[in-house]
Image (cartoon, rainbow, N blue to C red):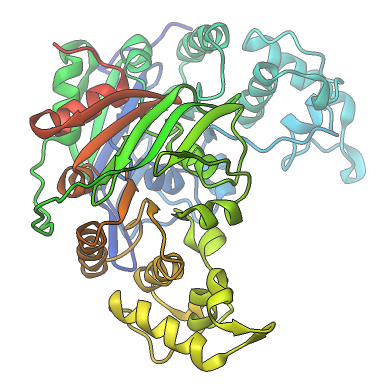
Length: 504
């Protein structure tokens, strides 16, 4: 079958789709059209709404407004099964497969082929699995246990599983993130085969070389809104970058006159076998150092290693000029480095515990005598730091899980500030919180820096990076791509370095 032309009607169309979460409008009347035999690249910064859209397409989320049509007929996807029944399937960056099952069993897991008496027809499954694998050029025995395959072959099994529902629309979400150069080339060939079969492909990637290599069309989202669509042949990389970031930094950030002091942290030659390589930078007292990058850049992985959660293969950390070996979070806190994680619910706080116990947990030596905790001192310490952050709660006995996202974030920050650190790492400090709470966190970050604390801020929000940082380090694929300051810090420059785009 030949790839179809753009004059044909779209297989799938989304019109004015909106999705609202508490305090956040993730999508605001966005449009998208997917054509048979063509690849449409969905482009946007982190937080543009791409993942929300994929979840709507696959029946995980329900839209709050707008219309979805398949072949011109309005449809809805109350469940993932309904989306699959309309021929929509997704190949995610991390697809769940099972090592103890065979390739055929993995391909048909959840929709096994049944024979007489409702029993699984294993022979038919093996035969159909072999046909699907052959159709994408994967020479894999359907009876092979998954654990015997390499990463690339497992990826082909995941693709075969997605195609086993006779898909008409194939969503590829960062499909090359874990693949080698050879495997990426093979994926490109597979995309061409799917196009030739008439599949409509939605391709989500931060890699511009991939987008311009395989996409026929593009759609750009920005801040949950539709910006533009068109043919990829009629646009340049620079124009695409401008559409991604072409909005003013319109949030109000605290006015700061930085008072940069002595060097407090020096990181040299930090490597990890799989996550990052060659990380070198310095940090001074009173400075806010921003770390920016796209999905998979390795920012959080590096910060977790610096905090002692994971172990680097090599690297030297100096604090106040002294070489400091950090093998655990406890040693990091002892050395004066604290880390406020992105996932505050899982990593940052113990949700069933009350506020005051969460805040004082790393500082029990300050609130205990002879092995006994002094409750009055616990409350006093917790009150001091929660008041500084303007925490809103009925009492310090309130379980953290009962608080809003912004107040949970304040509890986690208060917890680490109570240890009186020298360096605080804030990983996506305002993710998922409302505008008012964001302003409070930004004000407090500025206050911390003015008091001489050294701040590292990892953020995917360009306005936040530019509005709060004194310098910015841009990471790409586990390496430092650029270090920017002053007039170099522009939205276009950040995205160009993060995406690996040369200057025009």
